[in-house]
Image (cartoon, rainbow, N blue to C red; front, side, top):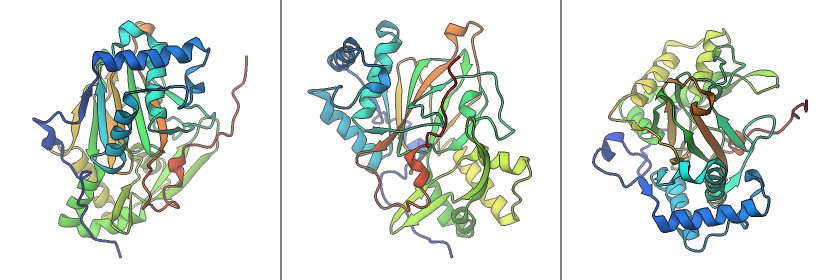
Length: 333
């Protein structure tokens, strides 16, 4: 029988709560930008590539405690931040990417995002399409339905914006849980039992597996969902669901897309978004690119194992929050 409880912490927010509240936005001061730029410059001067930078290399005298407080809020509070104010066009890609990586290293340990062991995800339209189970959504310009990533914290840096579209949206998965528990408690059983996912890592074998959407450990509710992947399994004939299973998923969809529930943000060049995957779902609208390759939308993604990671979690369910195991080597041409 499904657990029925109510989440009573800061993670169970609604998007409308922030209509006249920008407490979730950090705007860097000129002094903070200077400190971050200097730290990145020292790493670059030493010949360190972005992913070679360690926490101790990116020393911050005044900002380290501030970033620690950001991580505390992400891990155990509201669950997200938007950091603005980085003059990306002026600083250039190498410096901005090093700053993004360095901030992340002060929140947690970067982990692999694919079978090749890539520690930074390059998120842009590669001209491929989802629907076969062999293409991950971040490589397309298609709509990404609400989902979680395979880590404790996901960071997203806007390197270049799209011509149009590509809106980023987040929603509280714990608030959705509370709504379901209050209005449709019969939906919790199928959500905790989970749905079939059809997936294939780059260069890897095609797999199908069942994964719970919600896990309850003590008084801690955690979420894990890949909405597009669930749809792939259904479309490809790998999954058939009962009326109750379908209704539960459709009700969750209706909540994630409710404008009162979700919080939309149009990321600008240099913006950095950090979110907690256990309590926060994220999505992206379809986008149109510029024709010129150098102007195309480009995001940089970072997956982190948080230093103050969520402890009351069923690690059998959330074992893939440690990233994707490296199993392949890229061919050198």
